[in-house]
Length: 403
View 1 (tube, rainbow, N blue to C red):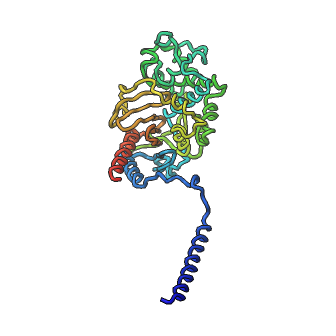
View 2 (tube, rainbow, N blue to C red):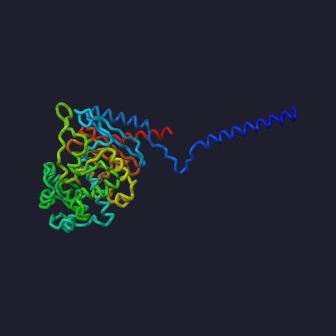
View 3 (cartoon, rainbow, N blue to C red):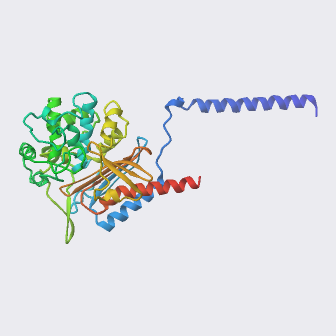
């Protein structure tokens, strides 16, 4: 081929390539530059798992006629599932949303345990402090060598008292001071510090300890150390705060005609540490994130370790969680249960009050947590946590096989 023609073709090709390159650079320059360190993390949401979980929930809700619920799942501090089901009341068209407030029942004990652990970490309280150090007129004689009831005995249910001592008076909304005066007169049946027996009235002693240590009411201390720092604006621990909320659920009880809504009652606000926390699912996002360790400036690693330590074994307790699949052992920490199965290391608690049921749990090793808020005592609540972790474990085991 003529050299002039080859040279001409070469020049034309070069011009075309330069043009293409310039156009490409121009298109690239139109995009906003994002440093690699600021790129969003890959989403952990697995739509296939969520569909399976959805199916599990709706099947169980239908089987047990649950009026409504709200559910949250977090993995590595990311919300991977959040949904509300049903209505605030069976006889109301108003749907539950993320700001609808539920009563948490005994899940409140976990808040008390964490608050106490925060104060212990700040050296405002010590686990081994005698309760009488904060309540001088408390003369309770513990069933141990030194006859002293200590802070750790209250929070771990190891006072030695008979299970649910005076819980009937808590149900009747008897004033806290009267309740604690009754407790003061009791004689322990079992060894203090060694024997586990679940309490509500005696658990309320921690409120007096916290009030003396902080100079605040229990409600204000809870707000100062937990609710406000975590931006849990919809949460509270008084009856007045609950009924002043416009967006609340009604609890339900079972009748011959299925679940029916019941009136909101003031019981357990006399000892809010035992069962008086109110919260919407939106706030439980922050709470779950904090107890899983993602707010160390608010709940330090030391405070978490204190709250989730295994103070007393509860494996012999005849409860549902001690029959979970693969169960190995269970213990009680400071307002929290610690449950070991063959596949999970779970921090857990459940709550029941006024027709509401609450379940909260997270696996310390797998960094996966779940919250169930029920506005009824439907039987699904008894199995919800176990079924969730079973589904999670089976799904991810099968997923790994096919990788």
